[in-house]
Length: 62
Image 1 (cartoon, one colour):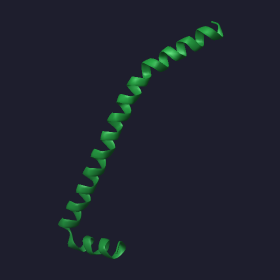
Image 2 (cartoon, one colour):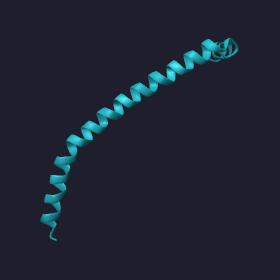
Image 3 (cartoon, one colour):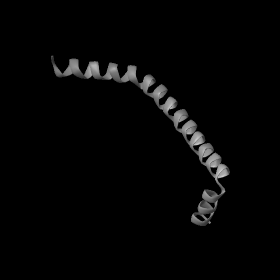
Image 4 (cartoon, helix red, strand yellow):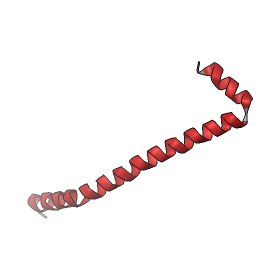
């Protein structure tokens, strides 16, 4: 297999995966946003359920 063949295959693969990569990145971005929202909601519920822990948080982060 020559060098030219290899580069041609690589560029074709790059063109094919560019769209897929964009899709995957978009999914990951949504996942991160969702994960952050769930995590923050979880922390809020935890603080709401235990006032002692809330006081500790208030002292830690003035």
